[in-house]
Length: 190
Image (spheres, one colour):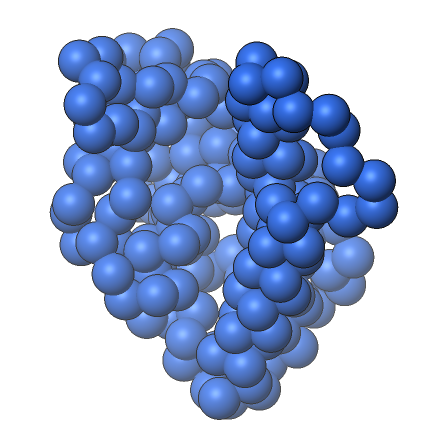
């Protein structure tokens, strides 16, 4: 017998906070509970991605292999996090591996049913896609800030005076952010 997901637990995720009871009921049958043990590899960088995940409890590490670096970079995610969404959205291989750090409970949301619900114009799917776009936009903004900080650090080390107004990096970051967000919206509408 499949595990029953408490509808109230769905609202703990930022991406579902604005969902009505009817939208939660429409989503619940698609969420697949997944219990994970420490050390379990959920998926590997380069794997095909057919689902995204919601971290209900525990911790997972998003592990990224960096060229010319011996050790991978781990980014720790806590309960309430959404991950693994880029591969199913883009139809491309996974860009990172995910390794379970502690006993963890996840919900798996398969890409196929989500895409079908979007195709039928179901309100929950549209709301979720918009929330997902916001998650990705927040990540991109954070990454842009890091890139700008790295460029500023590099310039300081090279003895260049700080630029006034928007730097080339800031202009590039703005352009990349706007193009990425526009592309995401276009794919969502199509």
